[in-house]
Image 1 (cartoon, rainbow, N blue to C red):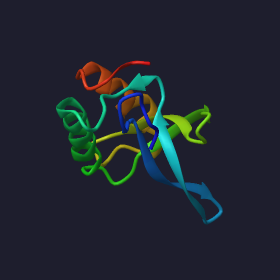
Image 2 (image 1 turned 90 degrees about the vertical axis):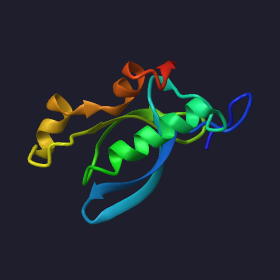
Image 3 (image 1 turned 180 degrees about the vertical axis):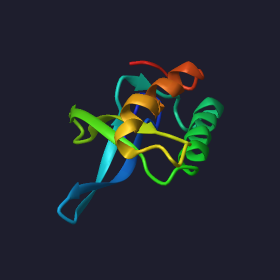
Length: 111
């Protein structure tokens, strides 16, 4: 978890990443381009609960990373779909980008 000026931030999440070739790694992913409220605030708890509720409803997510930040976390965009019939290859084009969804719903601001 990264530390903000006033406390712990939760716009980063642990993820099990399937690298292919039967190789899996646990990595920290910071949601790129957004800043969520601190988890110690009511707004932060609401944002975290929203993310938990949405992602608990899907069997998997697709992750697009851009780079590693100074804290060693991958900066990434998370895509998902509540449509269980959607092909994995279509989720980037037709699914929901979690980062943008958090902005649209007022749970985050542009960083």
